[in-house]
Image (tube, rainbow, N blue to C red):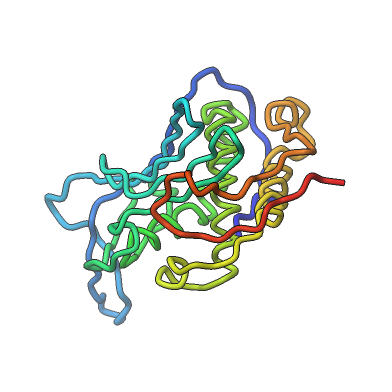
Length: 232
């Protein structure tokens, strides 16, 4: 779970970006004299990145998960409040272990064998939560990007409750959209705290609900969902 409850508040800024990046260089592990494994960058490696990017079209809003420039998964909130999760095969396919040494020393080292695990470790890390809190309050990260990202994370939380690995998460399962909405609102409350301008920017309608995907909704993954109901 993403924990934003302990984070502080910062000041305004006047720039905005539609994406959040984790830049890294590939690394390798070696043992030091004490027998401890130490991770260092591989010499000559160029910087790489994973990122989440907000975009919009006539169908709705989309969060693109990218490995460098390649989109490996898409999370969409359509205009009819339908959510669609479309991971490509590369997102969950096991590969050679990735040892990612962050170019920003404030970020955590990531060791993963799938992009699914790579994104999960990054998005649910303490440094990510701290940076999300800070740059949201400085308006570097616009509300539309942050809100869709938090909805995606709430959705993934609900999926993770059904299984612990990527293979299980790819299978058909029941998804409670009520639970997704509740987790989403909880994330928003943690982010805004008691800061008035944040509460205004991140206001979520009390009647906000999500709709189950219609048969005509394009989707790569087949997921059963339970419709959410309005707050009482």
